[in-house]
Length: 449
Image 1 (cartoon, rainbow, N blue to C red):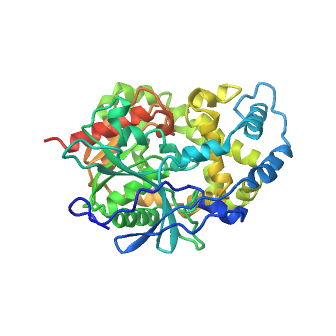
Image 2 (image 1 turned 90 degrees about the horizontal axis):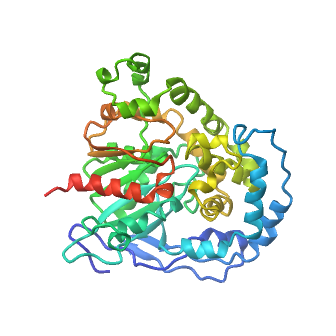
Image 3 (image 1 turned 180 degrees about the horizontal axis):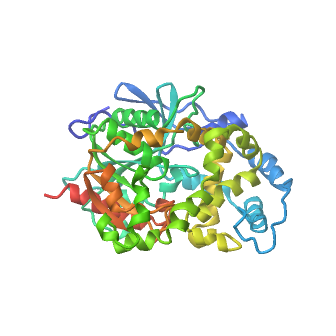
């Protein structure tokens, strides 16, 4: 294949490929042939192949939904005890009778999907190039990494804003080529069969992916696990990372102890008025809220396979477990609502598509193991500063607000810190335009003439 821009190796063909190659093995009904492999940098990148799933949904998923047993919620419990089973009935009814999975599959196939083998694992990724470029311009490579319980699908609404800004009300000053991989053990990326695949190993794998695609310098972006993985990449190969943009930061050192001292003199400790608004009252937002929202983390960091057995066997349980996070992690006040506020920010189609990426691939257990593999990793990485230019979009409803002063302690080359006007944990899916604009602002600061 011919070369591209200077310093970049051959690139995979842009192929309309299905994201559903694993269903071929699950259903054993596919008539699709082996996809054409594309050599890239001496390696092989394979467009994912399609698979017939006609028999899978009605005979398995629908049967399981029909057999669901639910426990009635307590009176006036709303979402305080977890996912309200009265509202779950509505979710299950929509999933069983109205959700059009074939339509969602077509939507997933809007962007090209690929697989390539790295360190013995088949790594899935979505790779979207700009449909058009201004004369004399080259796209800026951007790796975007998801977290749990999300997936590559979180980025589907932000991708066109980054790759085709002119047709979405944005300037053509910054046009990106976006790569969205699936973390090993999530969706279509193969899970490890041995212990030890943590965020450091994932960062190394994704770095090799970018090299294999011919990128020697690139931008990286992430939240949740994606923020940790991208931070590791910036720590490991800073000369290859042009900029690191985050919508969540892991800061776990002793700075939190200063909260007892700053209430009456915040400026002395570098806190702004907005910081105080987002962190007060301290007991609720710094202690009780994280404690209330982290029970899942203890389970998944200790014995993920136990709860995984239940979730992988029950679509109702899986939906409740995942969608409860999309409720209270989007806005903690949603726990006061009977429906958890889910449809205030997301459509049921979007929510169930993400759930289906766990259900159809059977990857909820392997995704949860990532927590056990990373137990203690947060504290280790927190001691190593990041020398790469960094930007942070601080969404007001994130699980915990991290002031700029704290971020600079770990990311000393913080060039952009934005107090976002609204939004929570799943920023790319909830507020794609806000996040896209902040990414563009950050890159613009780094590429000033």
